[in-house]
Image (cartoon, rainbow, N blue to C red; front, side):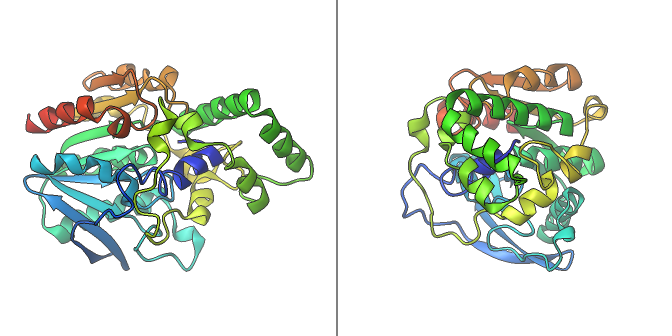
Length: 318
């Protein structure tokens, strides 16, 4: 995913990416499962084979993914608040937040729910977790969906650079403020800095039609975005220089070896997981089905659900 705009994406990935229905959205049944010493919140909806949905961020709760509710007639949707997000427990030590912990928590939830095989969909940062899970626990993955994803820390950095270029060109007043703050020594994770960064509208970098992202679905959901977790995984200056776990992430040599059916979706107007790099999945994972949604940004499930959901349903039925 990207920078504070990534943070934007993730903050907005969870307050207003958590969207497009009414503010009266009623969550499906949920419960806590104890995994790796923490209570993690999950919600389930529908019937059939399980589809685990992993949220973006890093740092976002699951609420923005409820646009996938429409798939409930074809599978059991399993929404997850990973460790440190939403209703799940938070860490006492920030160093407990790692990508590997997120991967192992998915495995723990699978076991706790008693599933032998699962389908898995990772959106944005969630794709990082989903791909690593499929590589390590492939025998338990029936289908893998990489939605608007990332295949390496290098790709994440390239998208940070693209987003910053777009902001500098289109929001020069914001960019000038940020550059003045950087000259004073402030970096991405400093609160005054990311507050200015987040004044850029979500729809600018993430949408084909920004009007699709003006309403909030569940503004009262607790802890929709964990900023400390976000910067722990992307690095303290991760909106400009990617570091820590995300910088080390790289599955470019592993994707071609995956044996399960794989669907990769991307949006033509995505300024986060930009098409220039998303298209590289065709080379890195040639066995996958790749779909570019021509009138979507980072969230085809919001902007072109009438096209995406039949594709997903058909894919999962194979």
